[in-house]
Image (cartoon, rainbow, N blue to C red):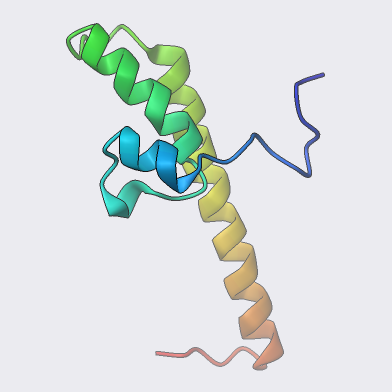
Amino acid sequence: MGLFSASEGPAKATREEMREAKLPIAYRDSCANLLIPLNRCRADTYYLPWKCENERHSYEKCQYDEFKKRVVKMNELRAAKDGARSN
């Protein structure tokens, strides 16, 4: 399987790790643990587009999964309000 269960997900980056990696605050989310090694790989390989593909794919998949979770949560909130939108 993997190093973690599907419900837990990978270990989250700490605030200290994000600060040391100099991540902008806008990118300090639940996928930051994948962005840190991606940025390190990018810097080491001079941002060559064919390098760091696995790291980039992992980060983008994490971002997409987080988006899907937000959509599900929004749909649950709308269902609780009988379909009424907040805007």
